[in-house]
Amino acid sequence: MPTQEEVLEAIKELGWADYKRLKEYFGMDKYQGNSNLPQRIKALQEKGLIVVMRFGCKTIFMPSPNEITCTREEAEQILLELGFKKRKRGMPRGRRIIKEENMMKVLRLIRERKLVNFRQLQNELNWRSDTLNKYIDHLAKNGYIFEKRVGKSRLFTTVLF
Image (cartoon, rainbow, N blue to C red; front, top):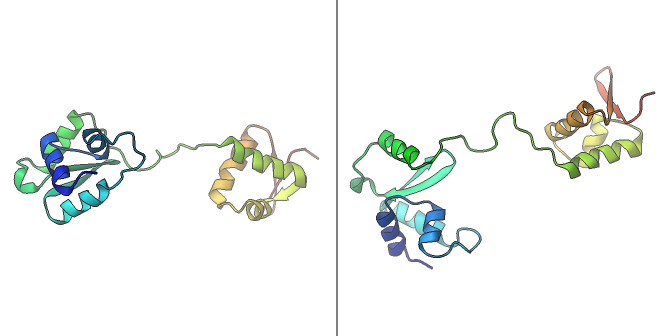
């Protein structure tokens, strides 16, 4: 495992680094996780020897500011030229992943109970309301279940009466 000095030298030699580049540099790319690299990076950052910069969803390590001669905008431009894409962290807005096993859980539960309301489904599955809504909407849109509103209550079934 590399020492702090070796990690610092690698960052200086590479010009910039992320966990993936450091693992490749030290021949640790077959290992799962980041091993002790986060500890080394944190120690180097606390000593002021490197700068840790977040660029979209990528964390980049660069030599300390007294060795860097460019502004943040210039650094971001360099990173764009290197192929980094600046984007927000997390899943893109509007994208939903429907897991078939979860969809089948909801469908099976509605089939077993014949007629069930939203609260009963939520209590049985122990899911958040937005997660349950996602699967109910998907099943209803594809015609697997039917929804009937009675006042404020939402009832779900697999057969029409």
